[in-house]
Image (cartoon, rainbow, N blue to C red; front, side, top):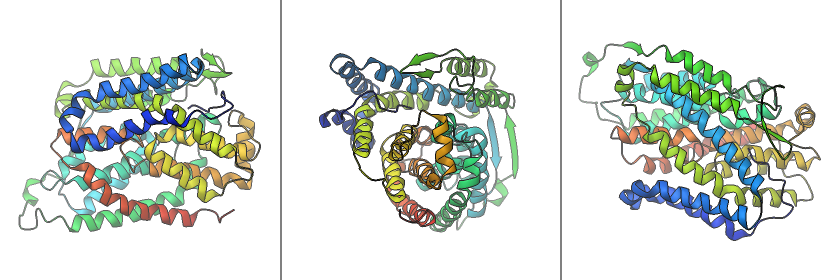
Length: 441
């Protein structure tokens, strides 16, 4: 992700306007002018993103910065696309009675699986069987809690689980550091969200007067099992990074080794997975590219438009004469992750935090020194803030968009409205987590 050190000063504040406009349109477009938005969102995202990029190229003369940002976008979308295709070729038929205990067990199992195949892979693999289990009483809150559990919070325990943590791994954070240090916030989140979901379930009276037990077979059937192989290969490619492994071809930008072999492998595997996929599995999943296209276009605009926003953030933080507290870093990372993509937010707050102690995010030895010190609590705050608050909005994390799009294609409406209700409960989780963090510095 971009660590914006090429410019010594902050950009003009007005450059943030395209980013704010895009966020506003994403928020209100589906609510107030849905037809117009669904018809023109691709054009809007491209025009705004390309406009900011063009200004940086022609007026600020920052071609490397734009190239780095586009390279990060390419890495981001190639992994999501590959996981989307590979997981989309696996059809899981889960036929169980829809009740609170079954759904909570589904969420916990899915959250654990997320740490193995990532939020994107788990979301695509599990959203349709989850909707099938609840087909007779499916409500928007089911989708929202699915996003909380599986598309975001569940992936806190490994770098594979969520993109921000993977970026930390590439910067030098040990693979199992997250498992060792973040297990308590993970357990608390799973417990509190399970309780909150239970209360939502008890208010759902759709089947109270109907006996549907005879309609369930209590079976799990999987089609397209060969795609698990492609899924595993895609996951392995994430470790092919020229900044970590010597000998891998790369493009150098500002001293940084930019990957392209990894992305080519991911796209190649995705193509093979799609061409060789079980046709019945694709049909059963109603597989199409519209959800991932929505992610691709909107996040192109987001990545490009957020360049000045991230620069202003880094400039504001580096001007402080004393270290910020862990609470400020936690809430700052979280709040920005809810309106930006959480992966670049993670890296920029990590860079900001390291700079407060005279260290550099680009130096792996500095990373190790930081982790070995008492200041490692800041990394916990950044990790939890980025992962958990990424669930607050559709743009906080890529899988959020895809799950929403898939659910809407299946006829689930007003998902956005439910976010405001469930989000209140989610904030309770955040408050509890703050209490588990270190004392105010």
